Length: 88
Image (cartoon, rainbow, N blue to C red; front, side, top):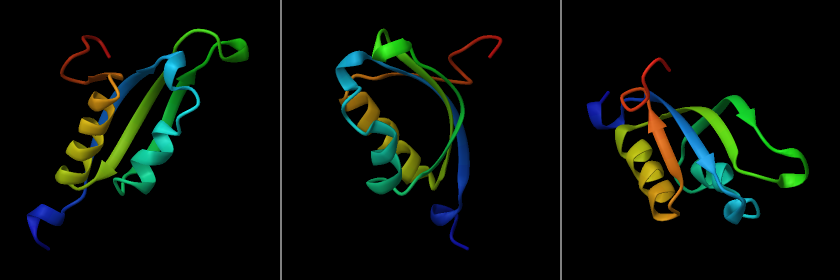
C-alpha cells in the first residue's frame, strides 16, 4: 500500500461555539473530508447554551486529516491535540 494512502489516527479536542451549532461541523468532517470520526466524549450545555466540547478520534490519510483540520481552522474552531494539551 502506498504510504500516502495509509490510514492514521489523530486525537483532538474541539471547542465549538454557539455560532456553529447550526452547522454540521462533525458531519462535514465525514462527508466532505472522508474521515472516520469517533466521538469519545462530549459536553454540551442545556438548551444549546455555552460552548460545546468534543473529544474526537479522527481516522483517515494524513492528507484527509490535514484537510479536515484546515476546515476547522477556517471556521475559527478551537482545536487542541495531544501535543498542545498537557496531562490530556
